[in-house]
Image (cartoon, rainbow, N blue to C red; front, top):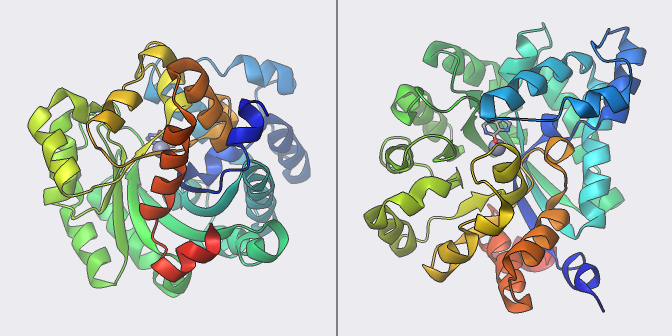
Length: 326
Ligand code: HPA
Ligand code: ZN
């Protein structure tokens, strides 16, 4: 009974997953062919060689470039179906899935195409994959606050399919306060709120996301470790952090996995979860992230079970749904 058999079947919720970041090279080329989109790479092998990132922006450049192949509802359905199948194999029972509508609007792909397309897969995911799902619409923080507000407006017809809003893309120079009004409007519409903070940005962005945007969960949140008073607050208020270990290594947020602060964060009492972020780009799905931290950081089986439990506690499921999912 090796590490794989101990980790993969653990029931997990995945709370930090960009659906566009699950676009594997093979599917990218298949969709490019289907849609007559020219990719500037000869084949999947050459594309994979481009997966060498020096920071968040160098990843985002490729992430936005490859999205060009996503055009129709069926493309989004195929993308989500492929993710849900992989996730189910790795023990995921519930997924709260980010999507980036502004990145698609930039190519003329409308909100309805994205949401209806994703829904083709999500709507039958429990039956087909045994994975319950929710959608979180992210605003691109390097776009304007006005554009975010227009995006929220465009989502109004689809709000029964969207559980909450998030904030992603290039962090530094785009503090949470820039999105105060759109988060207030989202809260008034009954949407849950999360935000990426403290990935590349300073710990003060984490506090600001809590204070100004009213987020109930922080995505990444890694740089909280630089501010002991902030750690104390996050522990006291049981604010969940969606940590993404393989992402942190690939984007050079930490040098090597053995140096990852996850064990220290758990020891400090932080409510951490383990997630894959953009698994097609960062070398693994959520179970692979569990295995990698077990291997590099020597986490005990009890710690891994705690991380899996945390993922349900930190999810947007209510107690009954949670019991059914795990
Ligand atoms: N950080 C910020 N924006 C993103 C990420 C991330 O890890 N993945 C996709 N968009
Ligand atoms: Zn992310």
